[in-house]
Image (cartoon, rainbow, N blue to C red; front, side, top):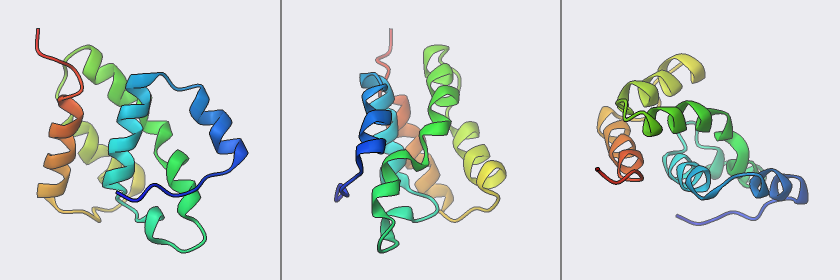
Amino acid sequence: MKIPQTTPRIIQTLKKLDLLDKQINRILMYWDPIGIGKIQGFEHNLWEEYIRYIPKLRDALDTKKPIRPIIDWIEGESIGCFYTSAEKRLEVSILLEQLIPNT
């Protein structure tokens, strides 16, 4: 994934994230269901576009709840339309679930 440049304001937002939050954000940036990273002139917004979903995903990871329903909710309900394939959403779910080691 090509990492876009960002702005000082976004850098300040990112500094508030811990390591796990940053890892979650990177996976959400990779997924980029609405294609922010592909819109010329808006690529820098990719860094913070999906931050609002980190707490919900973090909670699910911490409590070992399934991630896939949250990914489906993010795209289908919160964003309002499924732009990516079911396979891509499954891939993203698996990547996120791998952030917490099995105990």
